[in-house]
Length: 302
Image 1 (cartoon, rainbow, N blue to C red):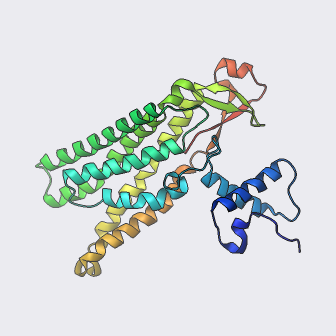
Image 2 (image 1 turned 135 degrees about the vertical axis):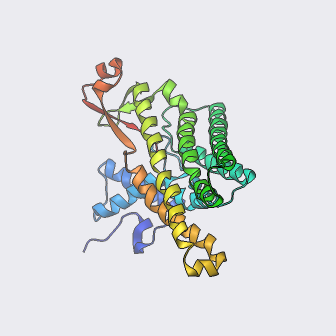
Image 3 (image 1 turned 180 degrees about the vertical axis):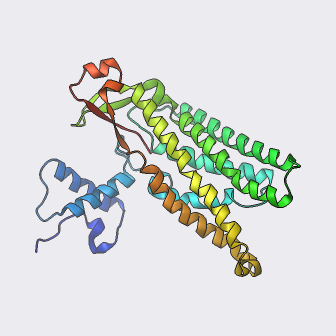
């Protein structure tokens, strides 16, 4: 039986993501790339090392992404915000607070997982952040005010509708967030690469595809998160257990949000691969003339 010399981060079945283990996994992948891989390393161990690297390291900068802004940290750090957004009987102040917190987190996630083949000035980040937060708060507050002023709904119906307000507010604000936080990519373009990883050129068309695909995932992601929990909780709150123990409502609500969030995130980000492909015929003429490849790749971002 061959001795395993693979990344120790996966030995004994206990993932450990400290800097030393991460460096060992990166070295293992570099050895594989250069044909100097030690004997006894299995494909499974290489794939596990690749998972760790992709979860922590930005593909363009090669730097670690701050944990709360990684996609692997989206669920644990985002669930408390989702619970806050879905709380019933929101006041104006609480609506503003939770929408601000949600879009602040989203802005940092979008920026941390952007295509970073071109530098982004801090001033553009601040402009995008302010625009994203303003749009989210404005939409959410506007919808809440319209519902509260409507005399056509009974108090019970109004409460149910208010629970669904976060979805259109968050979905539309997410589109603004992606566009504003990454708008520099549209003007400057992003790198497109051949099959060997060589940069062929900088494409504004590829940037448009990258932002459209990312924005679409940001609409799909909150759909189940903000629609299913209100439906599920409307049923659960009628159960005798929660009727007699009202203090359990918030913990149960949190668990429901966590479960739905955990299922929705992989579904949303799997719609488009991070390293997407595009036919050369769809790109700028100067890029098509610079390569013999039929298909190029680009980092869509997450």
